Length: 100
Image (cartoon, rainbow, N blue to C red; front, top):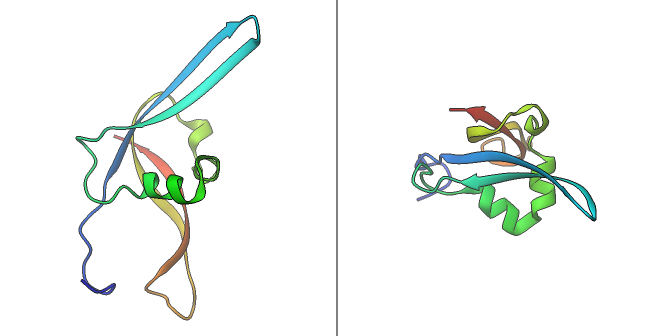
């Protein structure tokens, strides 16, 4: 399959959870995105990007993470950028959580 042919659709679905606790060391806050594998379809771009670029860089690129409450979301790409030389190839992008 060439890059110009139609690619199969990708769907990455996650559960966002927030945990808060304290102990003798201090106060703690944890936010987690867990893949809902039965609802994910095709290539998991979020997992691939975390493996290649690191988890910190992926979390930084989720544009609305701070505004989202716990729940189930589909991860979509946004702010896509293409080079003028190769407009059909996406060079860079961010992520957005869309409630399901």
